[in-house]
Image (cartoon, rainbow over all chains, first blue to last red; front, side, top):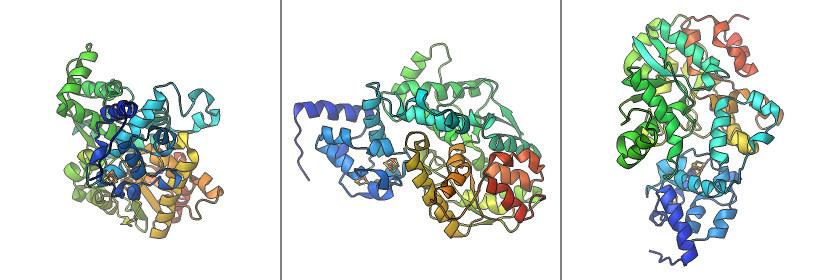
Length: 134
Length: 293
Ligand code: SF4
Ligand code: SF4
């Protein structure tokens, strides 16, 4: 098994990630089934498997720059297939919240076009705001 | 039989084609869907962070209202509501620490321990109504219509709330067949439609929906059947846009399962709110002689 050592700053980040997501990223043995099951893969700059690898190594900057968790649709296709029981959607949620809780919204409700508000079903608005605003 | 149900916000407005047809069809099957007298939005998605309990308050409040109204169980028709309520219910039932925190926070409410059983209407057809009875009550069999079941994400995942094991689509298949239509299978039956990304990253969501519609086209289906207003928007109502943008080459409309049920039970098509579906939906039903031209 790979031995992974992380520095103090990384430790704080990783502990927070673990606490929020309830996941132990070291469980992952990098089989890539999550990436293979992900319907949003084509639009991600970093595959879900790689996100876990980055988390295992405490690569905070790279993690923060990835678009993966903003593209993730919380579809749970990955976690029902993971042979190691990693709940990747929870990890994605924790990564989203780390930004959203700094008051940095991914969608600005006040700037949505009127057309969209008129046309979109409530369920799109509610779920979108829940996932993409703080 | 009287059954307590939770409509959720979309069924009362933009998805009346789902809500109204459910109530009307069930009445014809001698089941009265009794609306929860007080309810709020469930939040549409389950909270996935352990320190984000505040978003469980809304669904738990709905469950408490159901318990107060005498509901040992609560039926949902929208599959996203189902998923959100069923998962919140499991947290309250199985996680003593979170249960305690939430109950303390909601101090104006009675303590809740996950007593209500959250049921999706599709499961009720399988487990209570039964396919034989459903078949008997059909007045206008949907003959000649090839329909692909589309489950999306929330009816089967995560496994602990799935109405059927991951990868099995028998429930909707039996439902379609009971209505007299032909069930067609497609590989994307449980592939995500793009979901809420239609708000944040519309291009990404459109990519996701187009893959499913292309697959439906290849499978030979005339239409999809589904149970979620967000899937319906992405896959059906938005289909004109996908076609205009050259993302799909064949139009495959989608219907709510309750709309097809209502039509097959002989409900007046004007009350099935087909005007809320994509344009192609009415044309298809006319072509197949299911509604008058
Ligand atoms: S499927 Fe699970 S074990 Fe495999 S790479 Fe993904 S997270 Fe790791
Ligand atoms: S939950 Fe997110 S990461 Fe997992 S398969 Fe779905 S879109 Fe991909």
